[in-house]
Image 1: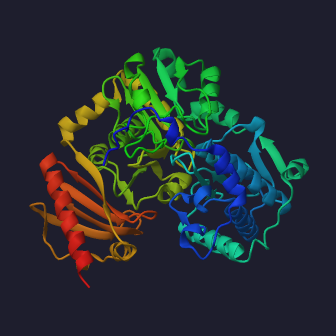
Image 2 (image 1 turned 180 degrees about the horizontal axis):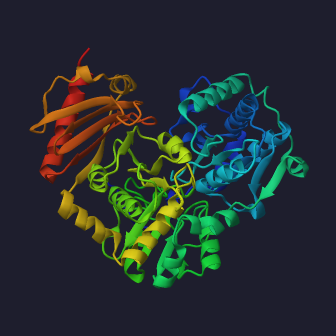
Image 3 (image 1 turned 120 degrees about the vertical axis):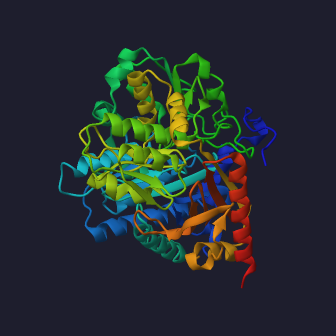
Amino acid sequence: MIDPLAGKPVPKERLTDIPALISAYYVLKPDVSVPGQRVAFGTSGHRGCALTKSFNEAHVLAITQAVCEYRKEMGYTGPLYIGIDTHALSIPAQMSAVSVCAANEVHVCIAKNGEFTPTPLVSFAILEHNGKRSEKADGIVITPSHNPPADGGFKYNPPNGGPADTDVTAMIEKRANEILENGLKDVRSIDYEYALTTPFVEMYDFITPYVEALGEIIDIDAIKTSGLKLAADPLGGSALGVYKKIKAHYGLDMEIVNPYVDPTFSFMTLDHDGKIRMDCSSPYAMASLVGLKEKYDLAFGNDTDADRHGIVTPVGGLMNPNHYLSVAIWYLFKRRAWKQELKIGKTLVSSSMIDRVAESLGKDVYEVPVGFKWFVDGLYEGWLGFGGEESAGASFLRFDGSVWSTDKDGIIMNLLAAEIKAKTGRDPVEIYADFEKTFGKAFYARIDAPATPEQKAKLKNLSPEEITTQTLAGETIKSIYTRAPGNGAPIGGLKIVTENGWVAMRPSGTEDIYKIYAESFLSAEHLKAIQDAAQKIVADLFASK
């Protein structure tokens, strides 16, 4: 259901009370016997809110202590790079984490001059260090991504620079909850101001090395000489300082929209459900920038930790993330002098237009479950040229085929759109329109439906044999799988594929809902038929004993 104020400026009564939120971070204590107040690592780390006792100082102290113990066990003796976004809880959480790291004699690097640090810059710093030195560095990113202003988040990135795999996060989560259960007695911590005077805390410039290296992955000269008028909207996030540096360093004609940080995010427009959400793939959250589309040749936005991208063109407004992924893949594999055997990474709920484009390029698709962590090894080892997911997150290799980042990088994806327009002279929306003429028009949608925890568990643990129907929306079923074809990992649900469509059903990890992703290359009516058939399959499954 769309909120009546979706896409409209935020009313003052819907702004977060920041002093109350910060107070709750320090004062409220989580009850570990309550599931929602325990440490829980999802696909993007631990997230929560101080007001609901799900992201408080106790959580951060426990998680950081667990990370310190884990990296000691693994023998990681290089620096631990810590980045933060602009959510109100991020600075207090960084202070808590630094106090623990210094007490554990872990060398941490935090941004100088109180700067904020996007997720991709942490990944970049880890990889740059580990490519030149033997002692292994790793990182922490304190961010709840595009979540509402009252939320906080905590992610761990091991030495490969990308999101930690489930085996690592499971260990950290388990140990952190043990520490909470033991009343934080195992936490080593010192005063924050004293920590800053120790040799274990270094003020580090994350932005300059990243910006100066951009010419190794993006044709910045082509963008500059094209005369394109650009706009960058960090949505009040950590990319602000990066875009300022890019503009100054390369002299691009780029206006920075909303060039300030406001922890209430009062300049935003409300998302579909009436919440403030810095989602650069949402037409409601991006309404302000979309409204300026005709002022620029190209505009783009990022979420608060800049691992997602949003492309706005004068032709089509906010570009569908699946559409842009298809265009980016086509352009990169046409224009980059990469080795022939490189594969294209996509999540199983991303558009099949990617498969059709890949086939036209003669490239193999590496299809994985939801989560960018599944692309980390391929990007790190250099056999994936590109990894992307339908939620507007992607990264790719440098011109020479070497790794750039193993986490999502919304900044390079935005700059790539400018390169595409500069080099081809065409709007990315126009390029995608050509795909529709060649490969067919894709009708894609995601819907959510309620599900109890028991129903979600049943859906998550399905086997293909439990689906007895032979057809889906009038077409013969070609394949049913519960493991991703690319790496054989469980998808936590089910995907059914026919000649002209597919549907994937998986439970949410954080809400009592399940998600239905579906696509048809026939019509909007066929898409609706696929969705209806999928809901019946799930209803029959839930009704069975």
